[in-house]
Image 1 (cartoon, one colour):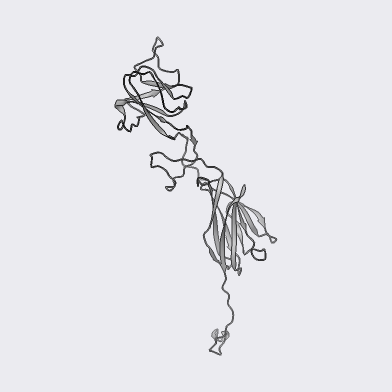
Image 2 (cartoon, helix red, strand yellow; image 1 turned 180 degrees about the vertical axis):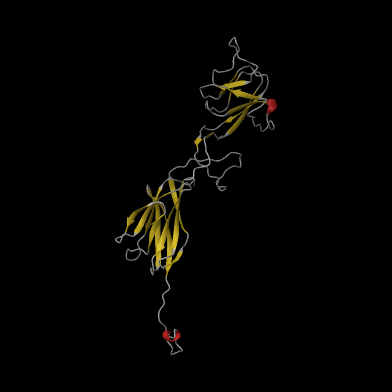
Amino acid sequence: MATNPYRYLEYYLYNDKGWEMAPIGVSEYTLASGVQQNAPVVVTSSGAETTSISDPWAQISGSGKYDKTGFGHFATLGDNSYDTSRDEFTLHPDSSGKLLFNKTLTENVFIEYEAGASGNYILDSLDFNPVRGMTGGGFLHVSEITDPTSLFLTTSQSTLMANGFQKATITAKLFDVDYDRVPDKSIVFEMQSVNDYSTMGQLYAHDGTVRQSDASGIPIAITETTDGNGEAHVKYLAWEEKTGVQDIKAYYLDASGVYDVVQIAQFYWGEGPFTLDISLLDTLDYLT
C-alpha cells in the first residue's frame, strides 16, 4: 500500500498581521490588540528591519532580533539581576498584549504580531489546487474540512449502446460548505426505476459493497467510501436491447438531502429481413 510521502505537523498562521513601535526609554509596552501567550510575536530593533519603516517586517534571526522568553524567565546574572547584555522580552500571562523587556529600551523597536483571533490547524494533508490556493498575500491558505453540504455526480459516458458490453464510470464528488473535498464518507449509488419499475442495467462496485439487489439478485444500489480526493466511483453496465434513459442517483449516507442524479441514454440497433421497393429481390437473394 502506498504511503503519504509528506508529514505535516502543526502550522501556525497569521490571521491578521499587526505591527507597532515601542519607543526608546520604556521597559514595557502594551499592544493595541491582546494576544495569547503562545501567539507569534517578533521584536526587531529599528536599525534591523528588513524593509522600510512604513512597512516593517520583523526578522526572525540574526543581529537586531529580540529573543522571546517565558514569563519570569529572563536570563540572570550571579546576583539574580537581569542580564541586560541580552535583548529579551516576554508576554504578560494575562493575555492583555503587554510586553515586558528585560531592560529599559535604548532604541526604538518594531513589534510584529497576530492582531486577530489566535488559532491553529492540525494538518494531515494539503490541497494544492491553484483555483482555491490563496497565496497572494504570502501565506498558505488552509481551511478545516467540515460536514458535507453538496455532492456532484458525473458519468464518463452519457450515451451507451445497449449491447450488454458497454459500461460507464459514475463518479461522485463530495464537498463541504467551503468547497473542500470531504474524504472517508459513505456514498450510496442507486439505480432509479423506469417505466414498469424495472431498470435497464446494473451497477458494479469499485471498492464498496452491494447495498440492495433486485428480485433476480442484480445489484441496484452500492455503498462506496470517498477517497482522499473526496471521490467515490462505481461502474454501470447497460443491458442488451434495453433502450431509454436510466437515472442513477448518488447521495451522502448520513444526509440523504445531499445528492445528485445523472442520466444515461441507451440505444440499440435492430436488424431484420428487408425487400427493396424497386426490386423483386429479397434479402436471401443478396446473400447468395
